[in-house]
Length: 275
Image (cartoon, rainbow, N blue to C red; front, side, top):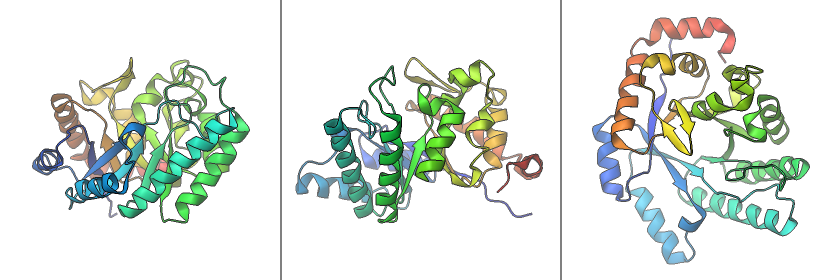
C-alpha cells in the first residue's frame, strides 16, 4: 500500500525571513505556518508589497496561514464588532490570495474566557459566509479546536464544521486539555472522527499550559494522538513550538515516530480512521 507521510512545518517565530528559511531547510522542514496578528496586517499598499516580498523569499517552502486574532469574532453579539471581524477576515483572504496561499486557520472565541459575548447562530452563519468567500478565491478556511469554549467540545466543534463546511485544523495540545477530554466524556478522536476528510492541518506538541505550548518529553506523551493523525488524509503537521530547542526536540520525536511508519500506518488504517 502506498502512503504519504505528512509534511512537517514550523511557525514563523524568527523575524528575519532569511534566518527562518535557513533554519527550516537545514532541519528538513517542508513549510512554514505563518501567523498573522491584527497589528501585523498591512495598512497601506507599500506595507502589503513588503509583506508579499518577505513571504516570497521563503520559496521553495510551502506557506500556510494562521490568524491569531484575539477577541475578534465573526459571531460577536455586537453587530458592529461582528461586521468588523468579517471585514478583517475578508482582508486576510484577499492578502492570502495575492500570496497564492490556499489555507487559512481561524478560531471561534480566541482570547475570551467566556462565550457570553458570542452568538452561536451568528457564529455559524458568518463562518459559513466566510468559508464561501474563501472558496471563491480558492482558499480553504479551516476551524481550529481551542482549549476551551465551543470549539473545545467535540459535539459543538462537529456542528460548527458541518454547518459551515469549514476545513479542520486539529490541535492535539488543545484537545488534550479540553474539559470534555479531561473529564473523559469525549476522547481526542472525537474531534476528527465525524469529518476525517475535512482535516487538512494538524498542530503537534504535547499540551497547552498557561498560554504556552509544552513539548513532549517522550514519544509516549503523544503517540496515541499521532496514531489518530497518521490515519487521516491530513498531510500538514505543524510542530507548534516557538523556541528552537523545544522545536528540535519535538522534531526528533516526531521523526522517530514517522520512521516506524509502514507497519503503524497499516494498523492505523485498519482502525477505521482511514479516508
